[in-house]
Length: 134
Image (cartoon, rainbow, N blue to C red; front, side):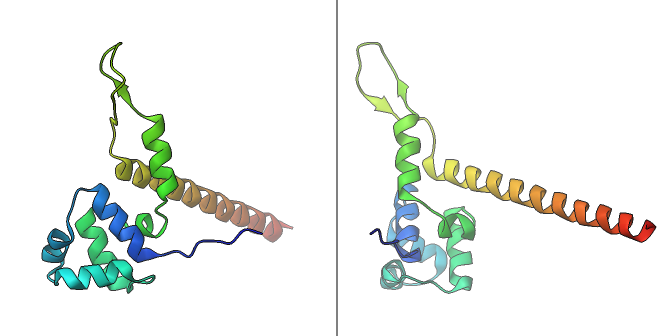
């Protein structure tokens, strides 16, 4: 039996902040709150929508990107995207910002969803027009 992990928004905020190279103090300063408040927020499973929006603006990601953030996706991107600087060097360097990549993938998914919804609306309109003719 498998159990699903809760959608712990606070942990996701912390990981995105860390991937951005930002300290709690910097996030607190940008939000106009104390570092202790940021710590408490990052330990909370849920975050108020207004706070989530403010945090997303500071971290330069959408609230949806925070809600759907996946640690596994970050590591998959990092593991599959690297640059070898020389033939004899086994040091690999990530050539992309994994947070930006996840945000871009999420935005592509959102655009596809919007196009699918529009296509369904167009079908309904077409079928309604056919019914009116008959």
